[in-house]
Length: 578
Ligand SMILES: Nc1nc2c(c(=O)[nH]1)N[C@H]1C(S)=C(S)[C@@H](COP(=O)(O)O)O[C@H]1N2
Ligand SMILES: [Mo]
Image (cartoon, rainbow, N blue to C red; front, side, top):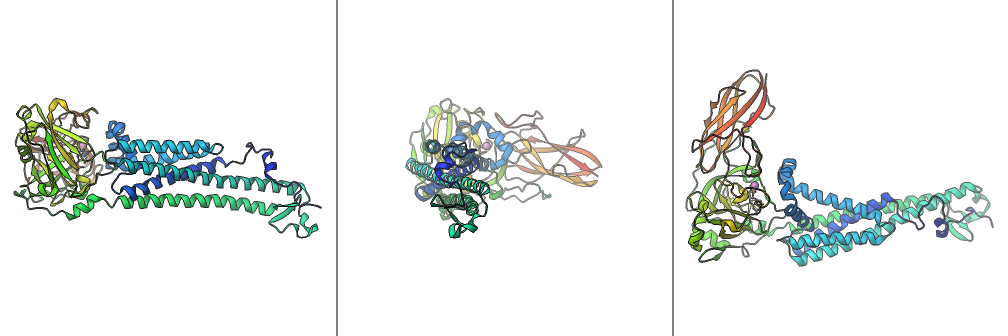
């Protein structure tokens, strides 16, 4: 009996097909890489879903890994990260972790083509890293981390298995197609005319059994490739959906719910209201709106809490350590104070500084109730704030008792503290950079000896003491602005919290220092808006600014980078006047 396909295509034949290096059909490298990427996405998505469904307020595996990264490595490159990504540094980290995971997935996919166990082992290793990071993460429940890791590994490995099988079918179909085409060219093409219903366009009879016809082999090849792509796309979409649902479930954050229940008491003393006195174009408003306030912290997942479960404990070297609830904190007499806080990482002219009205309980009231032991009441002592996620900052006891504004704040600009700014309570200490004082998501105040404890950033090379340096910033005109000759307002802000600002001067090029007009301030703890009416002449000009603090000391021209104790130097801006 004549056949259309002289040499039937079978598995046995395919193995000996010249040009096919593999002895067994394997997925192409490209498809295997795609399979690996999608499988890694499935693993990440499944992990998110488990955390969202079971853990609710626990951080995700990705964020646990990110936190570990921050604590181990990230901290030392914090300034670089802020420089590169600004306050999006956390988003950049998460994106980075996801991208690296997907790339590793691609590699595992390729390795797993012939030895699936390598892929499975790779996913298991992923899972172990995720789980260990989770255990190290203060916020995470270990059981949730274990469940998320196990499910992520199982889902990722299963997806890889499935996709590789699908990719193999595409390879097999492609080989069938090549073989079928080759053989149909090698024999009497179109032989079907002689042989009755042997070739219906889909199947041919070869050696007494059905084999794909040349045409249908091509179609089958295309079908198998499409099937692989469809499976990969569907799993990829499923991974994204799991991640989104997981994040949505987790993001129903307890703190956001708790915050909406807070009813703020009226403060026992109100902060003086200050009118915007230098309303010049884009100059920073005197009070920074909560939504515009810079955010800097190491928290990839914000620690969550409910009003019922939150406690503030005050302890350490005190006579009467105690714990208070949220309700008890809000029942205590409170103050309202306008205070400018700044980040030590703020560059000259940078935006990591803001001014807000804070309401809270004076630190002195809490320390008095606890009864600080006399041997640590002075320079020997240290006040350490510890957050719900284990971050710490410490400042000298002297600072707590020298009469400056220092409080456990629970409201910011008349609203309960926003979650990203420390809900339900944080420390605010006038005159100190945030990294040594402004503990957000406050859980504990501990009195220690100055020499016995270093806060989070100190072992990482930052100065143990962090008084805010006198600084001034030009807000208008904008950098590189094209200006027209004539009157041009120059304006900005200057700050030296606790000392206040007594004078701000600007200089055009190498000209004389000109004294600026200053706005009103609530106290020496806030920045001041300043303005100078410049009669601009055509040309290229560099505008510089410097401030003098309330003690009469003028801001140094000496340029210092933020590390280890804050940037210094005069802010300058080049403009063009035509
Ligand atoms: N728990 C916690 N509190 C923290 C930090 C942190 O990383 N974790 N960062 C501090 C730093 S470095 C600064 S500058 C301020 C910033 O406060 P903000 O984000 O409300 O502007 O918070 C401080 N409080
Ligand atoms: Mo900071």
